[in-house]
Every structure is written in structure tokens, then in C-alpha cells.
Image 1 (tube, rainbow, N blue to C red):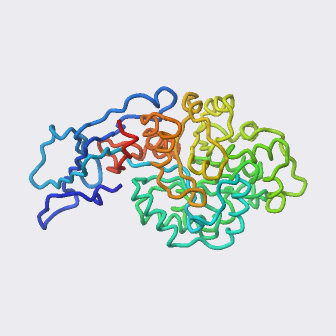
Image 2 (image 1 turned 30 degrees about the vertical axis):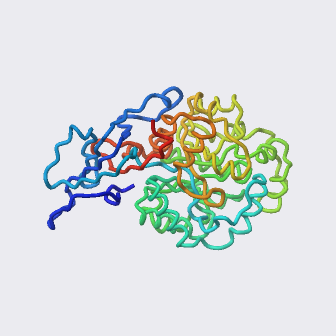
Image 3 (image 1 turned 45 degrees about the vertical axis):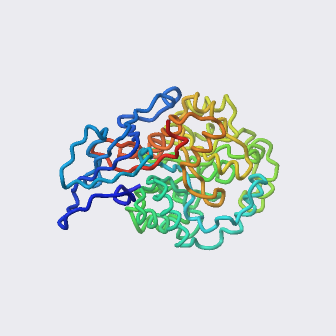
Length: 418
């Protein structure tokens, strides 16, 4: 949430107001997470420093200080905005969403398993993305207090450029994961492994390329050589590598036994002739391909067992949870408690509007709080510093409200405060 857009009573400024005017944003409480880094295991549950009756002091869009109201001495020209009985926290990070598919909201089948949902989605992917839908989705993210986004792109022609433009217009800092789908790899050994629907746009705009990284869709839908090449490229360029991992029972069945409804569907869509299952569960296959480790962001992890959770944590990879999407599709519930205790770096995402009703990542945290009784301290960290670390934007000031950093904040739902 941009502080200048906060609706609240304000002191009128003189006509000669300047950009560096001090802005004081007062709230019932403020969680800054100042000085915190990525939180794992027991650190997830540590108490958060809360400033009651707090004031966020902002000058030229940057945090000047965060203090109790009783300690603030404001100049007469300062602008004061009281946002009321709410708790402010650093702006949220939505580490996984699909912006260019936003026009497909409410057009897919939910609750019948992953293969049924996929069968309803794939026929809809022939058309170009719709500008209004993507722009509205990005505007909604900013409205929810989400200003950092991990966006999956490459599904539709022109989707990368459209999503990037819409993010910039909404004031979002975006990391694009250019997703490979398929087994053909039309790139030479000396070329970066960009998927076909992203390649020309990135060649035309090196500044856009700087916000992008090659990624994979999933172990069953992307060729193993492509996945390995994308992971190696990300490691070489210092970018985050992302892919969907252990999302559904159908995925596990397809990779272990080579049959099931997902295999039946992909035989007609993407699998090469003679494809054979690796005979491994998703995590073991990802390890075999060298996809896990620091700098990898795996998404979902619903089907991981307790031992696999430990292996994932030990690898140093981050894991993005999208619990409402998993619920909507009927693929199960991730072993969140085991994941938190394992030491894995956990963050949150919404997935896209093809499997979720909105892109408010705070509602993912609320669902985990209400359904699995996850402590609010852990959820706040997943929403902020952990998401920023998973997207490698922590050093850019994301995830914390601290002196000299961006004054980007959200309003926490009451259930996430204490």
C-alpha cells in the first residue's frame, strides 16, 4: 500500500507543498520486522516487535523512522494521517501467481482434482491475454497491500510484456518466471534457455529481461534437459529458478507408475512419443535433475511426505504455499506443520485466478491460521521477509519497514495480529 493513497483524515498542507514533506502515518500498532532476515524453524515463531500506537514517518517515499506516538515531535508543516485501529506491516509478497491468465477467472472446473481442472484450462489457452483483466489484477494486488510479485509467464503470446506493463503501472516490483512447457528445446548450447513465447520480447527489451528468469512448469510437463538448463542458467545469472513441485496425487502417479488421468491427458497434449515415467516421486526426480538448492523456489509441495520435507529443507530451496488454490482444486493440504519445523524457507502465493477467487495473499495466511492454527508470527514472516528472500528482493528493501527503506506497507487482517 502506498502511504500517499491511504484514506484517512489529514492536515491540510500549504500550497507550496514539496515532495520531501514529512508524512506521519499513525496506527493502533505497527510491525516493522526491521533487521529481520529469512525465518526458518523456531525463528518463524519468535515474538515480533510491535509498536503500539505507532507512527510511521515517511519522507519522499522512504521510512524516516517508526516510533510510538508519545515519542514523536512533528514539525508544524508535517502531514498527519491516522489510519485508525489497524495493524500495519511491511507490504506483502505474493511469490507465485499467473497474471496473464487473469481473464480466465471463473472459467475452469474446481473440486474434481487436478486433471479435471487442467482439462478445463488448456482449451482456453489459445487466445491472447486481455489487457483490462491483467491491469485489474495488478491494481487489486496493490490495493491488498501486495507490492512484490513472483509472476509466472509464457503461457500466452504477449503475456510477458502485458503483465510487466501492468505491474509497473500499479507500482508493483515484479519477478517474472518465464515458464517452459513441453519437451522440445529450440535453443542452442550457447543461447540462454528462454521459452519461445518470451524469447523475442526479451531480446527486444533488455530491461525487461533483467526482471525475468527461465523456469519450468513441472516435472511431468517440461523436458528434463530444459529444466536442468533453466536451473543452471538461473544459478549462473544469480536469478531465482521456479517450478511447480508435488502439487497433486495425479502428478505423483504419473511420475512413479506412468499412468493415471494426468498421463492420459498429456499423451494427447505434450508428451513426446515413447515417453517413460522416471519411476520416482517428484522430490526424488527433482533431486536427480539437480533442480533443488539455494536459489530455487518450488511451489505447492502438497504431496511431500515427512522425509521429503526434511530433504527439501536441507537442500536450501524455498517453498511457496498456495493453500486456497490447493483447496479449490481438491489436491490436498500441504504438511505445513512439518514444513515449518523442518527449517524450510516458506512463503506464500495465491496461484492465479484460474484456481483462486482473488489475489489477496493475506487470505492465504488467514486460511492457514483458521484451518491449521498456524501462529500469526509465522504467517506474518511468510508474507513479508520470507517471500522477499525467496524472490531475492530482500536487499531491495522488501519485507521490512526500516530506516532508509521503502515505506511500503499493508494492513494486516485482525486474525493475524495479537
